[in-house]
Amino acid sequence: MNDWKPKLKMRLPAIFLLVATIVFWSLYDRYEPVGPMLLESPTLADATRSSGEVSESGGRFILNVPKGGKAARINFRMPSAMDYESIRVRARIKVDGVVEGAYSWRCARLLLVQYDAGNKWIPGHHGVVAERGCKDWEMHEDVFEIVPGAAHADIVLQQAGVAGSAEFDRIEAQPVRVRASFVWWRILFGGLWIAAAFYYFPRCRLHRRKLKVLVFLNVLAILAGAMMPGDWIDDNADKVKAAWARIAEPTPVKTDSPPSGKPPVKQEQDSRQMDRFNKVVGDAHRTGHFVLFASLCFLVYLSAALERQHPLYFFKVGFDVLLFAAVTETLQFLTLDRTAGVSDLLMDVYGMAVAFVLFLAVLPLVRRFQGLTAPESLATSRAKV
Image (cartoon, rainbow, N blue to C red; front, side, top):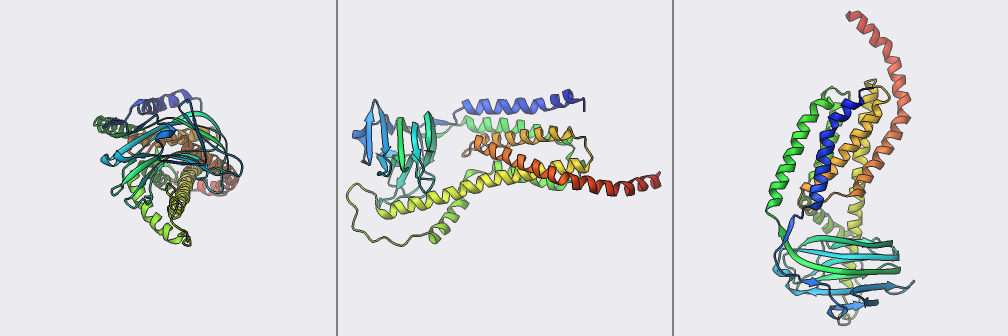
């Protein structure tokens, strides 16, 4: 195992391509403006409605919720948003002592919410960011597609936690479209990664591994999940949402017509149901990362043990699986509607760590099995000679 230098050199092309992909796609803006700003540095006087303890100071909006107090909210209407297909929302947010409520949506949030002609909230992707605890100023942005049939859209600042304050500034909303160059850059980087796969496949000697079929299927499952278009995920999620809404539909609340400027009770209930559903989807997504990389790491370790590899080989295996996790996460830069995330990579690492501990637990059994079969293997080899 003193040949670590050649082995490191063999991995350098993948590392360099990984760094180049991260740097380029972190700096490249795949969207370009197609219209004027729909909302830019608004004031409290521009708000369509507000509730709770809200104030403005030096261009910053401050939403405060005293312990046990009322949630704070500010809505800014964008009537002309329906003239465009996509809207990019940007803002900075700072939170101080935001305590999350009973549900994950009970925190400080920045939203783009769409309504139909009957002023009913349209379910779908609507959150730019959700923060809790204490965090200094940080810029956030997201791009939203305007839903067919939407009559108007609001930018919503919200502090729905049970305590704490949230500050927002540099709020912008602008119509955008995908740059034409995005397609060509995506083809270029996709081609480079495909070439890298052909280069490394024979060098990883997967066809000679003891558990090659299981490892290969696991790798394919990870790649399929990483590169799956967001539209496919959304389409399937919408079908599940419909079923979820039927199952979780609350008992109708009898109430008089809501006061002018306040959202209907049913609308708020629908929003809460969809936020709960989104949390379930997010948990399933993280679980998928954990399980797939835990199983891959365990299978590769087990295969190496069955091949009687040197113990130092396991460190190389761990590095390779970690490198593969970073690559698959980075490949999401090449999709139109998915982005790489550090939290997903951390879930991969957690899965790998659990797999390593589990492997260490079963390794003595593997060694015992190899010890029992060694004499038979030796006798067979001698008979062949």
